Length: 373
View 1 (tube, rainbow, N blue to C red):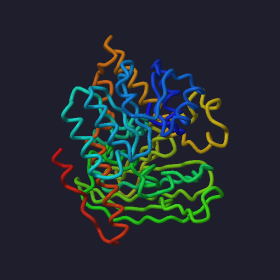
View 2: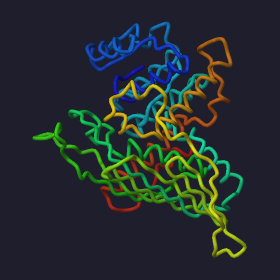
View 3: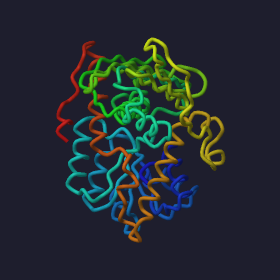
View 4: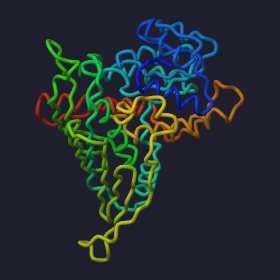
């Protein structure tokens, strides 16, 4: 495990619950790694990247470090023949992600997956099936709205800096850009976006320090299949994390909202919608053991939707490795819904185009290089 933050701690807990053994831990400092390794009974810890990668007991590397290290660690891991799970974002920019993708294509038998966990939620997998089976007809519009008030009481770190991968667009936007591609099968060709930071200081980030990571973002996308998409990400809304993904087609609509998927079709009269039906729903609770792992004030700010997506992903990960006695081998069929580095390159390209559009105030074309992969 690379990383000692909240996400790394959550992943360690869920991996252990699924039967995985955590053999080594990396932290930015020896003290940081030692403290968490002692708390979680991890036998080996270090602040040197290579010390983890050459450990003979390590066959799967989970990257939950600061984003500027993601590409470096992923490429090194693949080059020595070990499997990789990388937390989003995939590096700080398109070039970082492209290096990761090239390494993955050079070693195609190795696992190289991104942790876009929302793909594994029953609501989104069912939404994808319904759209693929022409349940709502041709997609016309996709709307996404995400509200949160996540403001962990942290001293200044990379998450407060837009240049280091912080911000609501990177933390939540990447997930929903990926979900839109996953459920619709369409990619963005052009984007128009706006980003800003309303809360530039907190009790622990003040004085000459200033938060530059965005806490509000809105963007529109023109898709390859002719659909239009609009998305609002707002991290200034008090209360629990909430989201809604609305897909409107020629025959009706699908609404995934806070763990429930509803469908509503047009009646014989095209101008009238039929009765709304509940199609699928997700678990609405944090995973078992989280209440002892995190303080209450932290647990309240870890969105249930991301935790449950993580649980479903790790269940599929366990199934993938259980098909063979060799712990280095994995079954791709069990993880067929997982996001690859190809998907990461697409998401990264879209995010960069949104950031550029926010500066230029015009529609920006998404890097078409990704369509050749």
